Length: 280
Image 1: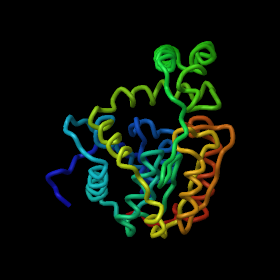
Image 2: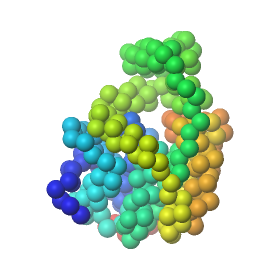
Image 3: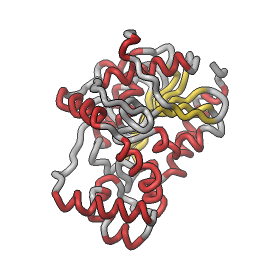
Image 4: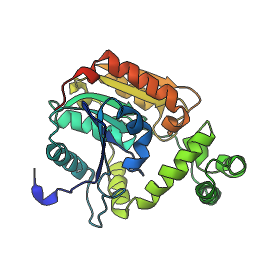
């Protein structure tokens, strides 16, 4: 590992017990994973970093997606984590699989949320009206989180209609408290790195067949950003994977059905006795 390119990530640590590394998506931050960390930290010790170029891990220097893996390896070393469970949402799930490929001895299990080893999208073209309604909905929601009038008038006509199926007050409260700040804190360097990776294409279906640890792959039936079909394809290529797809939900389904999702994660974690593993 070339120390010249390491980046000291900001990380939020909570709870005690077996380590769980929680990785956010794009745009995102450690704070946008509170739906997971607030719950899991009651049983585990959660580590939620701001990836390079996101949240409080700001940089103006260009980087590539591979640099994220070096940063995360350094974070595991700094926190003296020899083994952990890794949870990743969207881009975070891709990084979780990459960690499992690169450091199989350090990754005890994967929880993959709205992600895929060959991510496919069926998102419709975005119009100027989409941007306008999204801006208005976001500003009003920031001023008055979960305001039903705003949800009905602007939210359901904005780009949120592709991110949510259940336009609930709870989901819009998460948008105001966590999504908007994460979006504003996402650097141009992070956007550039992701754009370059998307242009290059990404397909690790053959490689992930090497991942032997237990995996839980969770998807949303109406996800337009990473389709449930591509998530299912990933589950089929992972040797030891469980799969679930939630109806009437989209890419932000952890904010649509948090109670149901967390209950399913608890059941899976208990079945594999992660909570009984020794702390590293």
